[in-house]
Image (cartoon, rainbow, N blue to C red):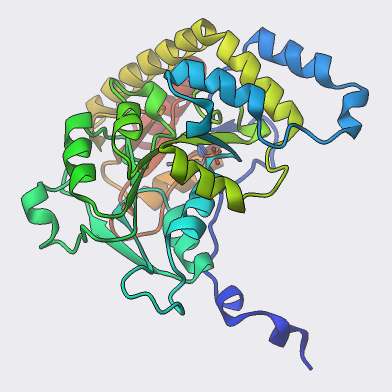
Length: 364
Ligand SMILES: Cc1ncc(COP(=O)(O)O)c(C=O)c1O
């Protein structure tokens, strides 16, 4: 028997998620995965150092109890309304497992997830892995959520068991108002997960919806605003019964111990992070104006990245030119995104280097 024949067709034929490239050359400026250019607070580094002792032989807290208590205070809710995951990617995978039937199941129309396009490119991959259907629905021309009255005509289903909404959106960087989201959530019969991976950079967030509408979950991560990608900490907030369902199906020790300690220490140092967010936002605004002057087109971003349509030459060519100059940005090969570059906001100095390459390419 051929080894390949042991593998389920679903797995053998999977279109996998492609993470942003990791640098292979030295001194590369990495603006392709929306990492925070500033380090975690000194308090976080010292908490991790202090915890790296003989405790490493022990299992971590299985329910992240101390961290959930801290997060509950932060969001003014109960710890029972919070589930912590190995990054918010794990939360997203759990949500499919808990609320969506695989397509082989017999329950009609319970086997679909829906999301807007463009949004987080992991969503269709999660659908494929889970073996359910995906219902991608196009955002408007300026990446806005179409009017509620038009959504059905555009293919959106108000009875889908799970809708995943990236807010503010990625890769467009554009924000939705809480009132738009509330109207949509209240019309949905299934679960709505608001993926607020970039929520801390935005002018408003929709956490209140998870606390007042029973079918709404809000997912957050420590990866972006809190500079902790390396530690893989994400969480979601919502109704106690939904959280209990997710809790049943996660791995017993799904969140590593150092990550839990780092996340707790992060919440002790919130003022430090507010300062880094302001720096990132100031840099973003300056970089955006400079790019507009070079005739790049972009919608206003409320995240730590911009989504820019470059002038004169195809985006893919700009991607290569940046790479030749040791700058990595992200390009997505889909029809609705292929004309754009997604550029993470780094330090002032990194963005200046990026701008220099753009100007040289345009001979200005
Ligand atoms: C929209 C969105 N959601 C979730 C995630 C996953 O973040 P985490 O590092 O917490 O798994 C990302 C990461 O890029 C993201 O862009």
